[in-house]
Length: 351
Image (cartoon, rainbow, N blue to C red; front, top):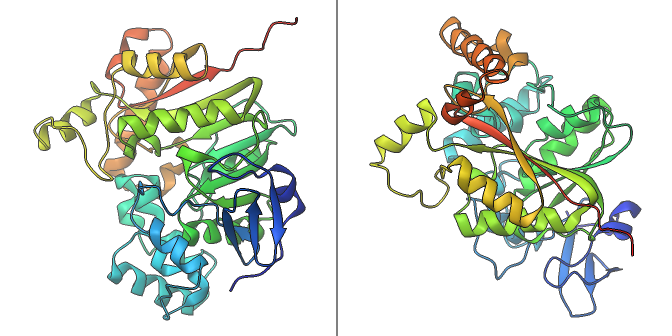
């Protein structure tokens, strides 16, 4: 369903992702002076460009569904065609939706894809939302962009920390799930369908840009574009905090060895050295430093310990212990599997 209903905040802060021009509401779309048009689906702007190669499966279906060209009839309200999961998993989502349980059915099946492979055992059986403690200072009403938000777990974590949150993801189905869960939990988060490489936001808008388990799936050129876009939409003095996998992490080395250390293709993870990350973020945003996120995998969160079987819980506790030790032994950062790159956009000197 396409409607002209659109949050006034979007009209004030979105720009054309192709040329950064101003947008006007025109019938059932947002349009810029150059003729680019972007559909509004049930109040959600779909700001994808149809001439840009996709970074994840399902993105093209988001655009087609927004234009009324693609529809999975099993449950149209769940936007199944754009979720990037298997047909069997989509059937599972439909069956779970029929039970009307407390957990959004899309989230129940996206949990392994978005939270990490160590959450695979929870697929279809999730009994609470795994919302972590976001590693940021209190928001105090500052504006945060969640890049690659999927079903919104980090957006919800940011809201709980006091941020005003906008999330963006190329999957229409994931964004709709994020909005449903936010409404269920009373969070006034806003969501847009769009591409991290061409963010549809005005320059200098956000205080914080946050991204977790997203840019690792991009080619190096695409990741560089996304980081540059984060810099563009950050305010002077703003901060970016981006999770990335490392080349020398123990678990990361195992995965690289399995594919004979070739570069990733498609949606496969790319592994970065700390030096490569520092050069990219320093050049694109500003002075950057590292914080350890974890060991033995990507996505393990201390808040999820009760969701883990004993074997994974032990890995989680070991990761937390090494993370604590890395604060006094910086050399441990080099073998972390997952790090945050924390970058500060400089404040321009007064004339």
